[in-house]
Image: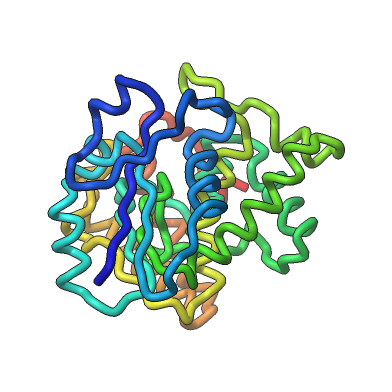
Length: 280
């Protein structure tokens, strides 16, 4: 299994965070911080020919901090489950379970993201309703923690390159929405970055033929430790999403929202809703 697992860094501080078991990928001078990791990933794809049987990954310098996994553990995980097209290492069980999709999670954290991303899909000509999209553990990958073959990356790159061209031209209302700054703690991050980080989950959801191996539920971090007492409920939430995907039975979706409502009331002090409902 040939693996090209690169870890991105921008400066001396981020270089010191690198795992020596990964290959460093420097964004020299960080000329376009508005694109974050995408600038380095894009340059790699434009300047390298990919082997269809090899695996490629582009991890942030925060990979260990977010997953508590080192390079050897990543390689061991992949080697123990050979033959997949995609391996994912999503760092937050709570975010993966408690939202219908990565876009619903985005709707809560970055208001307007679903409308902008939906307009982007329409501009591309990709027929998908982001408000009904479902991501279970299999297709959820936050932080772009994905190692995959080109069968995945080709689709991922095509969608993001369309967004890149729009945003760089900055000539349409959609482009200006992509370039708007959205909430990210104390940092200033543009909407396009948060959409880019969700394209991997979108691709996996739209390509069920992909063989995906995601990090075992028991090994996933909980994200917010407040959710730890509800670990069984998080597993059930994922099971309800999977059952809905396979059956399209509305009863599973209704049960998901009811259980999610109870979980967030117990574990999330910022949650203020009186009844179960989507965040869209």
